[in-house]
Length: 305
Image 1: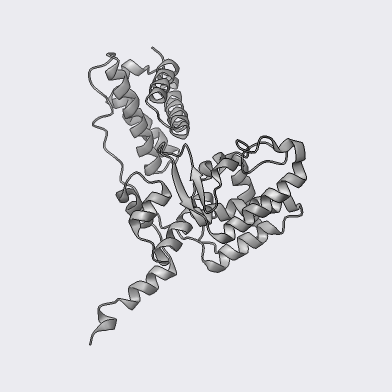
Image 2: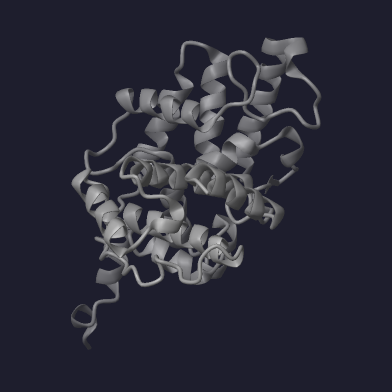
């Protein structure tokens, strides 16, 4: 048994179990990265031990990988070896007693109101109108609905209803619907009109066509969206402390929803989290002036009578 063989078997197994394509690709990528190290060291799956695992972790630390990334890699390997045990190739999972590394909680600074307006304005000023309108829609979907970049790329025309989006094949393999504002509805209508005029016959079947398309009429991928955001950042007025990314836009959505009074249970459903605990962990990394202002207003000492 070699690494490629068992990883293929494992990915087929979780495919049969109904894992989402996003999750399967994530497993495959991380497991192959880990297997590359062990292959270089001459360690086959059935010969792995505590010493080789410690060497693998030290190697990742030497490469300056974050503790959170290493913990995810360990978790993926543990799942792989659970499968190996289920198949009767081993009796004990060598990753069971691997302790989680302590993780530093990063403060994530969401965009403020003026920065949100600015990035949308920068996107709209693109020299090609159809590209500019598409980019505006991309930003607005993430800000208005809190979608992941991968979820944005998977959207099809059939997923756009009168006042909501249907998010299919998401990270936890559960479809969900999210409300869209009249402002986003208007921009979506404008984009469809411009898209039809620009691409004509390339537009394809209405029902199953991708919502957001490339300059060649195909579906956008996550890499292209990251490139779009990178270009927007060059001309946008964003504080140095803010990391402009799809993840930051998702955090901005969560921050704005909490600021505007949405309860955490509904927020958890909108974000597509598997539990409220995940949402609580998610939002506790947020740092925004609004939270400081609210805390000050409810300060014990400032409200003594």
